[in-house]
Image (cartoon, rainbow, N blue to C red; front, side, top):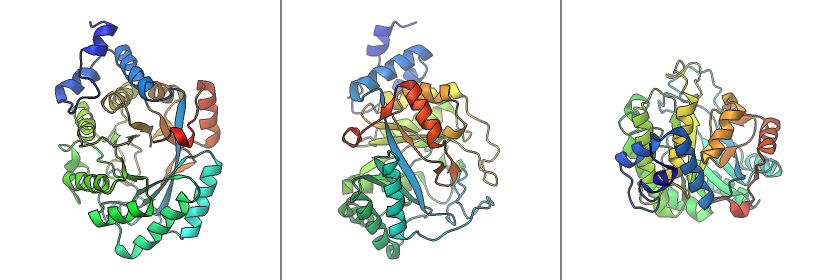
Length: 331
């Protein structure tokens, strides 16, 4: 068994250009304590280990999406019973952002259930970005696929982050989604990067994928021309009526290993503990924070799914001695 010193030097530096499958698999399979030690060491080299960046996510257009993503409550192809709504009014979105800031959020994320935004909606979307920026909040949007022109328009409006998850490995992807390709996902991320917007891209754990799929998903992100500045790691929430409603829950230890691997492969990125926290124990969340997760969504609702309430989050962070990261510390 390798010593602690061997663990810290045996595998490639996080500053290397490319990680290999062999590299990542070797790290993932380390004894649990060695893996957490290495992840926490990488975390401390790049972040305050006792601060968490707080984001708030609002669904600005809910349901009716033409995509067939097997995990999603908002797909028009799934009988989830979700009520469909139109794009929210700009003033209402900005008012909700103001409330989020009062609640401690430093980043405000806006999501629309679209395959891609239509040009007729871009003026409203741009107005939302500018209005939220005026509140001195970081802005993030997730609107589906973006053309290079749409990415440039959002960049000009001042958008800080664009979220577009790759969900899983390229190999497993067709088992979850058939209405767009894995390559479409990568193309949107490249359009975002070329426009100068920070990338927010991660995946979902617990959809029936193998550990190899999870590792390959993180490798795809880590080996992009520049890794995403924000990496959300979601635990599947089985939605009644969706394709994955009966998915087997992921083993918590395996989930923590993925958080740690994300931290090691992308040491300078925020790793966000995202969907699924409602059903996570405090102990599981605490270990995820120790493994390098340093961002969460706050509020009772995460798009259309339940999220821990502010009282529970406040209590947990207080007990752990973790405080919200100020705007200056957020990427």
